[in-house]
Amino acid sequence: MNMLKITSSRLVLFVLCLLLGIGTGAFGQTSSLISVRFANPHYDVQANTYTLDVEMKAIGSPQQLFGMNVRFFYDASELEFLSLEALHPSYSLLGGSPNVFKGNSASGPEMFSFEESAAYVNGAVQLTKENAPLTIEKNKWTKVFEARFNVPASIPDGTMLCPSLTWDLKAYAQEEGFFPAITEYD
Image (tube, rainbow, N blue to C red):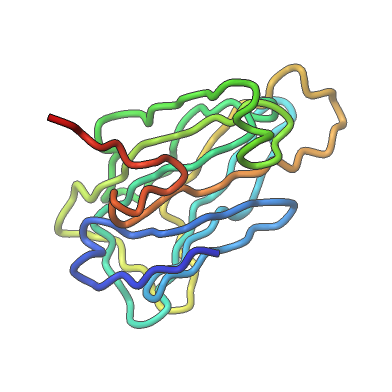
């Protein structure tokens, strides 16, 4: 697990510093003030969709959430990103629907031991109703939104669906995450 101390003032700009792999259960990543996890996986066979809650809890004192970057990888052979939904009423997607990028066929196996290509979601959630921010309570999981995926038709009916998702969130661009920093030259 990656850990990072985030001060309350920095929480306004950046909430998470995490790496998360999800299997049959939901596992959380912890910073000094906020812990976040994918939880409550639900596979709707009729709609062929897979949904996960994104939940947070405060480790120390309760925190008010201003916004967060939403960046994670998943196995593109098992899922296709649809949307972030069911946001807390005081929050909206910043800049619209997140961008999704799919790597080449070697990206998934080389980076995460996925079966095929890794796909990358990059977006942001931000407070839009300043008079009603979400309070992340101490030691109590609070749902912030859902991540929704389509399950490809290539996945046979009756297959045990257990996809991996990996957070790629850093508080500072200099810390890079999975992608190296881009340096500009004169």
